[in-house]
Length: 587
Image 1 (cartoon, rainbow, N blue to C red):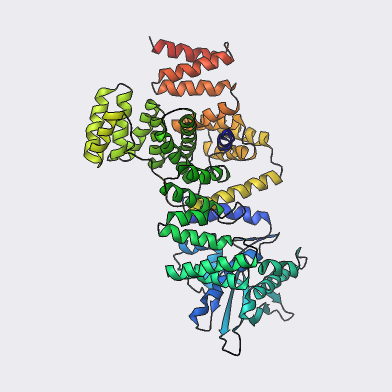
Image 2 (cartoon, helix red, strand yellow):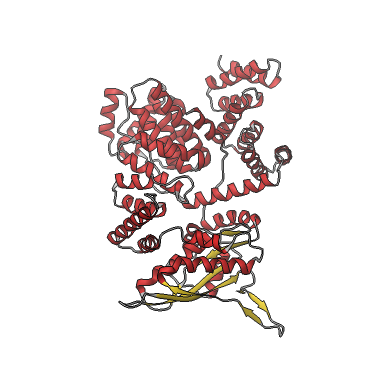
């Protein structure tokens, strides 16, 4: 478990996009730099007016998005495409005009848009259903279809035609993908056979059932289609799991509140699968709903080190705090409390304005017996919402435990007004000094926008490392910017340092200085403590923490850091001055 703590502490604060527009802007430059063009594939239009075959158009978007993902070409994922539609307030079923397609491409920061049409001829007892159609590619920046310029100056657009029996749909899509790729790059590093193998890896019946199940809004039909897809896939692949279908089924069961089935299907996904992070998040919630703490944490703890998002930290920490609350004592309780406070301090650091996250951190600190620190966090929660009954109740008890009887009584009276379960909670407190009536606040929605933004950050990190970015140069630049008072410019440089070198104590120290200068003391404390974690002899971090706690009136903590600074260097003038200040104030 210590490895988990270490991995968590290695993660840096990442400022995530608050809106999808900002999200796409953040991720797109990394994609564009990664290699040439960025492509978004839109669902193809069914021109045959046979609604039963609308699933074919969606399958083109999904399949081509996967098949076009080759070196030198970056593809906008299906999740990103959905978010772009939401940003532009377009229904996912819309069939966009060329102008709308260009607008979608611009919003996704794509340079190419693939779109197409098809028509289906239904089969009968003597013939099979057939499909034929064509695709075009739009160059977003030029606002026109790709093609060639003829000798007479006219522009000849390139149209890609396809057609075959519907049962050969995946083969058609593979050939179409190869045509598009080859037209763009005659030195394509993959062969048509490789593309076709990738296109046909899912058995046709399983593939059709999956796409139909994904598209329908009828829960029973969706369940039947997806279960059939999983059966057909397993039959053709020696019992292997069709993870895409498993994810969709897990989502359906989760919506139905069938927690056992949801958890089972979400848990079928592995790290290599596209929706693994989202599946693990909801598996954790499903197990939690079943009161299975062990498996809930089993799903979330590995995810916390792979996907450092506020919602992940929040849920892992909150469930750990609840589990610790149920333990009578001993090593398990200590381990769970350390886990809870570590995760939740990270969550507060990554999103200090989220008062629910801060409430959870205060809750974990309270359960850990750190009542003064809990009260500090709860003050901020109550500032955000003075009618938060649960926060007022915990705050009054934290004050009571720190011998602030008058303030405790005032807040207890406020809690009576706003906390619906006050009577029950108060009886429990008077009887056993416990708070099981109050629970932490879990995030119940996986934020895909935050996740995709995190992937964009990782891509930028990969690019920095590929370019051989030097952390010392970045630190030197950050120091200069800090000295010039340009904190907003210094922080991104420091984040780049810790993304490349997560154990760089000086980067955390300088970040802590910046937060101190801004007056964001909780964030400063977290950064400075992380700095000490990686280099316990970094005397400046000890001195700064001592000053912060002295400013807050917490002379016990201030003296702790003053003494640790003196142990590192008894001749350091700033450490000596800090110790004198603390000693004088305590007389």
